[in-house]
Length: 318
Image (cartoon, rainbow, N blue to C red):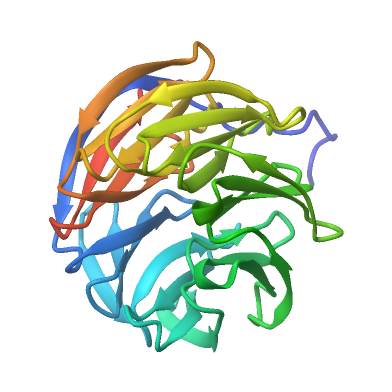
C-alpha cells in the first residue's frame, strides 16, 4: 500500500551548459547529405534526414549503430511528438514535383502515412497541444496538421517565405522566420491570427525561443548575424556577429547559451544570452546544416552535409 502523499517529485536538474562545447565524436555513414536532426526524449536515439536520398537514419547514441528507413519523397527536416513516439518529416524534391510530410512510428521504425503539403515544406514544429505546424516556403503560409492523423486543420498566411517555427513554452505564441521578407511573424496559436511581423536582419533562416519564453533568437543567413528579441516588447535586445551563413539555432536546456550553425564557415558559434556575448566558435564537419540538443542538455548533434556525418559535442558537464 502506498504511503501518505508527499511533495511532488521534482524534475531532474538541468545541467549547466558549457560556454565552450567540446567535440567528442563524429558519426559517419549518415547518408549522402544529412540535413534535419532531432533527438529522442530518452536521449538514446538520434534521427537524421538524408536529403541526398530518400532515407531517414536512426542512430543509437551509445553504440553509434546507424540504420536507415526509406521514405516516399526526399526528406529535409524533422520534429518529434512530445512522447517521442511519432517522427514528422518534411519532404520535397528539388524540382518541387512532390511535396509532403511523413509520419514515422519510432518504435516500429516504419512509415505510418504521408500526406501532400504545400510546395517546399521546411522545418516542422510540434506545438505544446500536439498539433504540427509546417512552414511552406514557396507558399507564404504555415499549414497546421493533426499530430495523430496528419489531417490538415488550417493554414495561416505569413510574409514570404517561412523557414522555421518555434513556440512559447506555454503554447500561446508561435514565431516563424520569413526568409525573403526579413520578418519574424508572431502568431496567436489559439486564434491563429498574425499579431505582428517584426522587421529583423536580412534573410532570417531559423528561430528558437528560450525555455523561459522571454527571448526569441533569429539567424540572419545573408548578413552573418544573430539577433535576439524580447517577446513582450518585440524589441531588439542584441545583435551578434557570427560565422558565414548562419542557418540553424537552438537554445541550451538551461537557457543560457544559443548554438548557431554557420554553414559557410564549418563552425558553431556559442552565444551567452545572459551576458550577451559570443563565448566560442567551434569547428565542426563540412557544410553543417542543423543542430539538435539532447533533452538532458548534455550533447549537441550537428549534421555535416558534405561529410555524410554528424558531429557530436559535449554541451554540459556530466
